[in-house]
Amino acid sequence: MTESASGLELTIVVPCFNERLHIEGTLDNIRAACESIGLESYEVLVVDDCSTDDTIEVVERYLARTQTGSKIRLLRNDVNRGLGRTYIDTAFLGKGRYYRLVCGDNVEPAETLSTILSHLGEEDMIIPVHPRVVPGKPLFRRVVSRFFTFLVNLLSGHSMSYYNGCALLLRYDVMRWAPYSYGFGFQADLITRLLDEGRTYCEVTVQVGHVEKDSGASAIQLRNFLSVAHTLLEIGIRRFRRVLYPPT
Image (cartoon, rainbow, N blue to C red; front, side, top):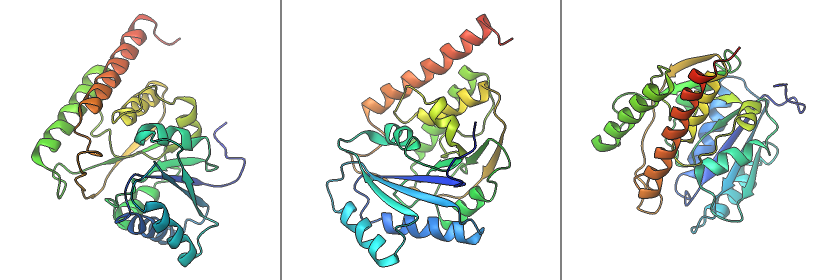
């Protein structure tokens, strides 16, 4: 059920919203990482989420210059759908057996990507763990991140080190168990659900950077806090349901 009919091993989705300064570096790092581990069976789906800058033009020039059209495709959302919705929707458009999100802001060096991808196929889930101190990430954001991990573990009954590191998953699982929450907690929602379903995993410590977004794209917004609250509620209800109706 998890085999890809296309024979492709990996689909990478790269969502972009106003990433003209970072998208070329992101694509360079993906290509370098795949080359470094000898991975040739992959595709990259770049999804422009209604950028207001010239992100699309930058990607089109990149594809023409590098002649990577056979591996990298540019898709466009008709309306701004946000990170979580784009991640889920694009899973249905991919062809790879495994699936991973790489954000278009170029915060993951090629070495980090190759470290994650080198574990491809070892477990159902390869979960990156970020260090406690990420260069460029404000103290407030680090505290909020740690508190979020604490709450997810408390409500889910699991004990993971990190939930927002863009896990490498089976694409079938993303489609089958897609979360109803599309905000910034969607990864925690999906990972805890897959843990509930008995999926195996390994955690891999990686190095990343941080790009502080402008006010329109920042994670620190009221709607994102409300979305995270919804995610936590869903996780808590799911655990309560497991207690009432344990799997047989």
